[in-house]
Length: 543
Image 1 (cartoon, rainbow, N blue to C red):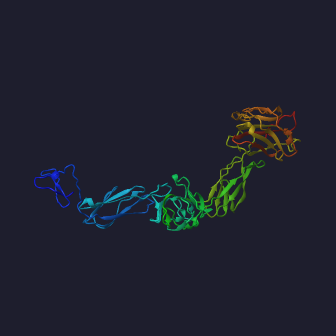
Image 2 (image 1 turned 120 degrees about the vertical axis):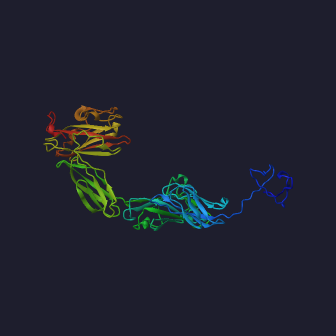
Image 3 (image 1 turned 60 degrees about the vertical axis):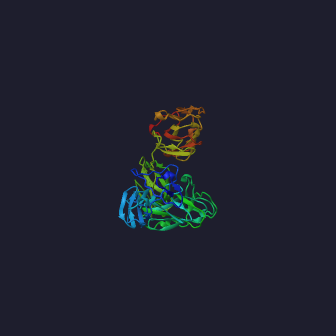
């Protein structure tokens, strides 16, 4: 306290100030007691002691358990004979110890832990450490303080965990891309590397994008800076908030060293020039079982009316890293070791779904399974809405089989009428044609019945038909829904009487010439008779 001279019979209030005086007093709650008096200044001094010296080191994240371990390293005891170490989470972890390293118990990643190194003689000289923490840096948008990068801490390692079903990099798992968001002024201060759990290093970015600031969009990590083999060439042009997909300095395939991808990966950012600082905000490594997917589609099924089967083709547009095998769940392996091209699928009975699988011959995980294909004879069947969807603003061809005793259209077989049910919003989007097996076309309906919906009534199938027949009512442009009855086609059905054989695949073609309205073919039937009207209808001539 301030030096005060307390003379006999005086008290602290009447004491004499002076820098040369030495006074002591005991403040207790029992007599004799002396209390400080208001209005005077008192200076308190801690008893002299030396605090222990210590620091904390942190383990890498244990990706298998999602934990980390902190270790307290006591480097000097000060003037304590020994120390105790207390964790904010686990309580006392060491008692009466000297210099050395003392691990705490494991903590869940992201859980902060603090420590007190207790001076066992004078607690005033305790040493506080922390809080410390280890995060899983993967796929998380961090703030500015978690992973700082600066010239005073030139190398920053961001450790993060990866978990993948694959077990061997380059065999059953591949590095597809790396996503980053890094806040940093003057981008070309930075060298960025990625290190797999086996220690293999790939250089991602070395001194690029000049005096621009930031890789990716910082706010909310909204847009990433992506490294992927085959991306754009990295440049030295001054660029801020660099986004897009870029080709790394070294191929990501450098990391494919057959090691296990599961464990702790490291993003290493080195600031090689002073004066500018930053922080890592986002890192994510995208692994895939297939580095170059196989791309294939199927064509529409074509009915073979003679065999009551359908056929279709598989169109391989990208065979991936090698060749492919093509198989189906019905026929087994049908093509082996082929490349880009069109490959036929054997005939399959009407109504049998066929699922096609296209598999890379070098990386079996690069397998594409296509949606099932099923061919039917569309004739004279009430179809569900999903069977024959009509392309919006496109052309849909619907093949169907006709079997008739006649052999020549216009001679011993005549088209008497065509029955349809088509679900479609806004009828006058549609142009409808009928094509015989010889390719002759007749226009049935062109943009009729205005904004009404549906030709025929889908709820009444096989009743509620919209029928095209010579002598029917004139087609009109009045908005009409669920149009039923007999109507004269745009062109005479006799246009189809070209002396060709009526037996085989006919096509109903529906063209949607305006976008935004959808529909489905629900019923089609061509009615053939053996002679021109008047003539009885052959029930077995039904198309």
